[in-house]
Length: 365
Image (cartoon, rainbow, N blue to C red; front, side):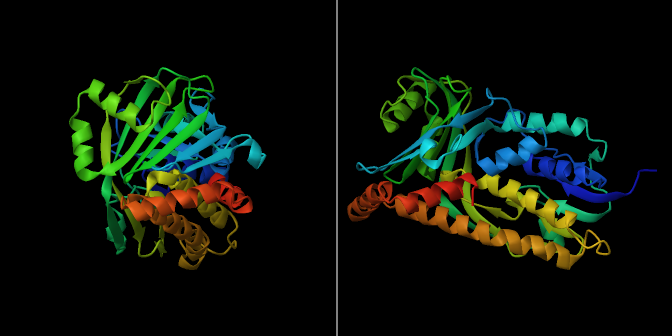
């Protein structure tokens, strides 16, 4: 007969695995339900902030430098001369962020789980005092708890790929806002690497056009889009695409259940904060459960409301910020373009405001 579970986590992505390890440290018996449709070759890359790095480091699940490249500078280009620089040294920080591959993160967390006797990997859910839904934005369990998921689709799809570049990336994350497109090149393969991860947010029709191009033509279009900043570029993976959306759950918890990560909220990827928000969810939920009164059960709704209240404010602020930026840069009318590039130049010299924004993004609140 299987041992009873304290917590059943549905979804074994980065957020679910991290939460399982956090709860196991408090000797909770955790069942981690493995996702049946996990991608076999996940080429996504994440911009991890300082708080996420510290959290995963405490679990001995942080990838080595070859798989988590420190970003020392970020260059943000407007479509008409606007330019903002962020530098780690100006923030007195080791790095602005670390770019880590999804596969590397999942693998390191999997290694940590193998040495954790309080976590049991499951092929299907089992009853528990608390069920945590970490199944992502397409969660099937969320509706079972009567949760409505409000979704606003952007008229954009994201295209992702990995590329090898003629020039080294120099630990610089580069981003271009141009004619409604948002193009980001994120450094990979360590400080001396020549590899980057591409995230290119474009209109749906343009996404279809770019996906249909042969590799050399796509590489040429990309080189034109990033002004040849890294020289010749060669695809090293297939391209993938997905629709972009802003979404939020009507409620995050109820008696015996709670949502975390993309199952509760999503944001536009232009700021690279989606996974950081999910990991912050896991950290706060574990903290709330750890600090609960001895007489209060894990699935107590009042207890879980503490987690919901603590996290909703930061998530809503990030949703507001990323949505505002997306709406601003999606407009290609000349007056709006002039205004936003004027604003970028002003922001570059704004001093304390620029420092505050950088600290928020890095998780140093």
